[in-house]
Amino acid sequence: MTASRSFFERDPVELAPLLLGAVLSHETPEGRVAIRLSEVEAYRGVGEDPGSHANRGLTPRTAVMFGEAAHLYAYFSYGMHTCLNIVSRPAGEASAVLLRGATVVEGIELARVRRGGASDRDLARGPARLAIALGVPLAATGADLLASPFELRVPSAPVPFATGPRTGVNGAGGGAAYPWRFWIPGDPGVSPYRRHAGAHA
Image 1 (tube, rainbow, N blue to C red):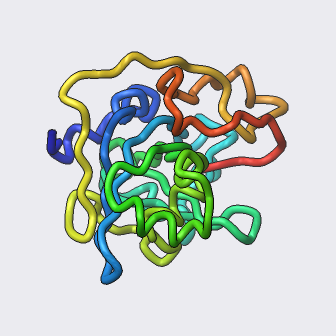
Image 2 (tube, helix red, strand yellow; image 1 turned 45 degrees about the vertical axis):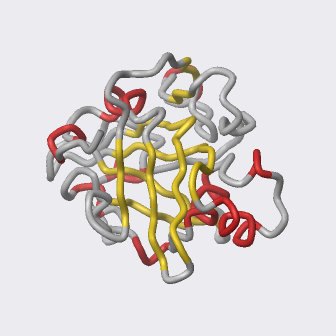
């Protein structure tokens, strides 16, 4: 179903599992690709979450996270990968949900070209792969996901999910202290889980 913006104006830990099974599409001159979300991670805001880009406050990079819900927060990871997030909570309350894994459900031929020979299972199985398959560049940060060239449809009812530690958030305040990674058990779009140093969203 097409959700109103108010649907996204909630705590990211509450919103994240509700996004599992959601279909996000992106239209470009090359064509349209749509993905069904299999795995997401929640990131809170200032003073709440040491793994969040917004934890230390408003910066030019994180300004989108402090803006209107259901907008895209895109960032560059490790100097080579674009990762995509959906901003949550009302404007002024920074938080976001990282899109970690998905399955391509429309435009698979175009996604195959973009991913350069990857298996169909791996087309969007991981945050960087997902962004490439959709054809969403870093410059799209701030875009409204409820308006063209995007379309975002959420399930009419929650799907069964599992939860565990986020990927890439270790040490004090990370890992098991923040079990805010949510996924659909057995779904082929769930990314391989790797625990390593770093931060997302």
